[in-house]
Image (tube, rainbow, N blue to C red; front, side, top):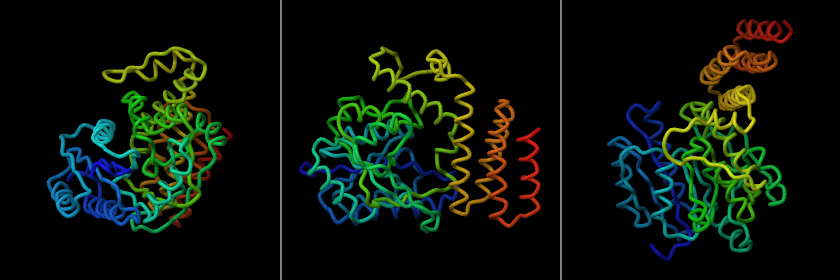
Length: 349
């Protein structure tokens, strides 16, 4: 479909060893159906099957046969960044709409985004608000982002204000700046937003356009240290570009991100504090969705790491405070009391 304006790109990696495999299959079908149910119809849907199980492959083939807008690219497992870049390379649309295999796009998402982009041709990256949902599709909270370019240009260098599976962006600009970079693996989206923001205006819709699923397989907590290091690399390299400072970052091969950050004046302590905060953030998200055991697992990893790295006591105490809140939510009052006492001892000893 060479005349389409929108190319939807969705990578899929679900194997027999995926936690809650059957649920992941159901989520995949819901994600696909949410795209096929869009009120705007003129799009192509590129699904990159990144070495998924035979059962997943059969599901994707079924959808490909049933709808001529769908093209499935089958490959051995090459990872998210390769899959995204190859999918966008094959795309024919003027705009790329990202989608993930466990989320749900609302029916008017493409119509709203395309209308905005046509009316605002200087905007090259567009996201939107989203609902946070649990494994059962129940809304537990919502995420509303700043909408104006001026606000986002000021805020983006400090934090990410775009949900990856909600965005639509200009394919030509994406190609010109080199696509997703391997050097920022696990924060490749944030790195891309920073580079796109240097080439044009950026915005978010105030309307909710996505239902974002929080579950035990989310990469952001499983790869927390790697993601935080990648965020620092993306942020620092963007700062250097703004100040016209030359730097070298490899896109392939072995790269010691920690050492590069040290050379730029970012200490291990600063990185470790950010890692602890990130673990705490994801524990709170899991608490919101009622996944208390996963939340406690995340906190355990974060707390043990903060102790081994000898972080300031207030950091460890913050993690213990969150653990106390989770035990209270579980109505495990003895454990909550014990955790609270540990927090007080840690904070003031």
